[in-house]
Length: 175
Length: 204
Image (cartoon, rainbow over all chains, first blue to last red; front, side):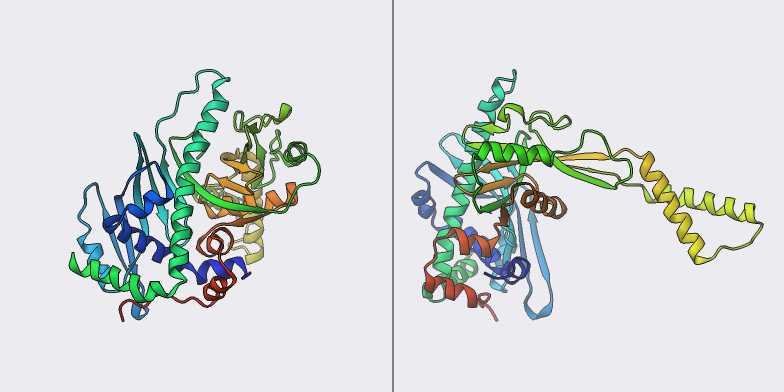
């Protein structure tokens, strides 16, 4: 086991590659998500996408903000070797909707908006609301964990270099 | 930010190790021993300790009130005093002027200036109330999983230190490498590949 601080910095790229792949999967093949969540309805890019290109010892950042913003600039950045470092997502199952941001380097979840839960009107309501919130958070954390696990097995296989990377590049250039 | 807020930020942890004896009783003792003090320590810049979800300004863990179903839910409270730099500047200038007038001198040595600055900071720290920040956490003991409701570096570092002090259990922060290594069920061969993994080179 590597030292935690060393591992954090050494493997930042892994989280960024995960988010890049996730964006690609969102746009090209959502069936994978259904395999990991039978209630899955849709996963879409929300109102923020940040990409970074650190090639040639220079850092270039592209930030796309706004509802229904065009992501073309992000695709162009991908073809130049950039990776997604932050993505805002909208995740739907049945009639419920979650919104959250994922950061590549930490895989931290931020700005998480859960589906509506019941109000706390009396002290007796607290336990029910806490358990409902925990269930709803578990749902999205579990989903991200499952998708990341799928990604990491792919990333550590030869298929990543031989098939996935060329497919991502082809998708980025053809859009 | 907290579990009951309309928007949350979450840092995920894996908890390593096992508690001896009754889990709820051991956690209760750890929480009680390291609860945020009810009376403010006027002289310290920051104080951290555990508090309860329901009453964060009056910690109460009696009756295992931190247990919700199979989860333990409580909070880290960090009370911090921050003195506005302009306030330090003002009181420092007033103190320097007074010292010069009292001594009839035209300048002060570096040591004297530093001593006045230390005195000003020390005096103001005692007069300024601490600002409390409360960060909830959800601990699933059986799953060895913990969610901390903040992504702030300082708050996470305080959590990691206080957690080991209180319960003698380590928290491993889950970021890409640790999630891959500990949560994805990698084979030995995959773990070897992970150890040597480099950034993809899709475009040169």
